[in-house]
Image (tube, rainbow, N blue to C red):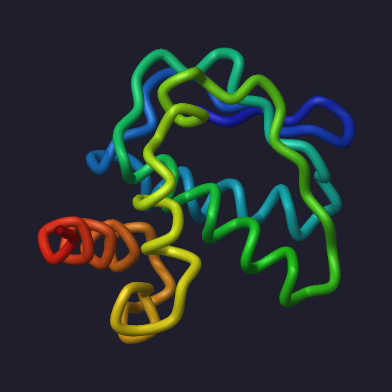
Length: 118
């Protein structure tokens, strides 16, 4: 799922709700050890939990005073509607402020915000 290549981690295979918690924890370990780039070139399948995963890593890096960069983002992530991204970034009632800092909690918040959107 994740392999380390110097200062980068390479995700491979699916990144879906079924395995995102494991990917989150494994990635946290690599990022804490100094990896600064997350490469998604080998991701074969993803769902909205992948977006939540990347945002969780980004938020954690920012809180730790580090910067991470994402390489080879799949088109499906780049093409997500702005409303989906904004529902994660904006404060309550649109964002995940009441959700746990986990992909599942963030995904749930995204889903709830999308249902409320006009």
